[in-house]
Amino acid sequence: MDREDEELRSLFTTVGAQEGPPLGFSADGIARRGKRIRLIRRTAAAAGTLVAVAVVTVTVAIATNRPVQPVEPATPPPPVVTTTEDTTPNATETPTTTVTTTITPETTG
Image 1 (tube, rainbow, N blue to C red):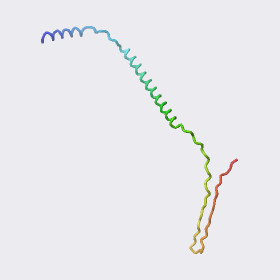
Image 2 (cartoon, helix red, strand yellow; image 1 turned 30 degrees about the vertical axis):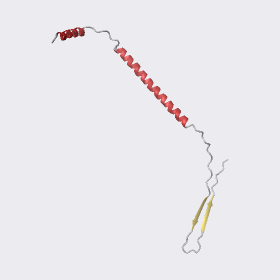
Image 3 (cartoon, rainbow, N blue to C red; image 1 turned 90 degrees about the vertical axis):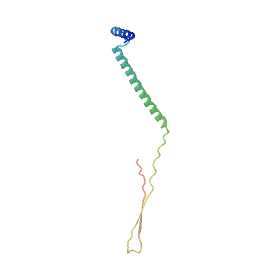
Image 4 (cartoon, rainbow, N blue to C red; image 1 turned 60 degrees about the vertical axis):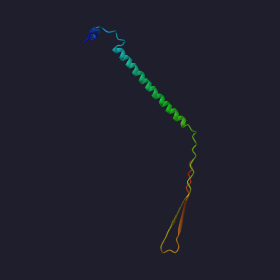
């Protein structure tokens, strides 16, 4: 080894034995800061979710805000006409029976 290596080695051994400068942080300070950052992030996430839900709700409300058409009463159904034919193989004429049924809505009062 040369002389420079020996000087560096002696310098490093003396530096390693000395007390270093004071640290600018402690374990308690790091824990407090971590809790504070976690609280801020959770609060921001909750607020962001709330804003997103509000935006979607308002958008849907505006998009579906159309005037409601009044409902008109239903019209009564048309009369039912049923035609039956009685076919008899020996008959000379085929009788036809027609039944007409008219359904009218009942009035309640």
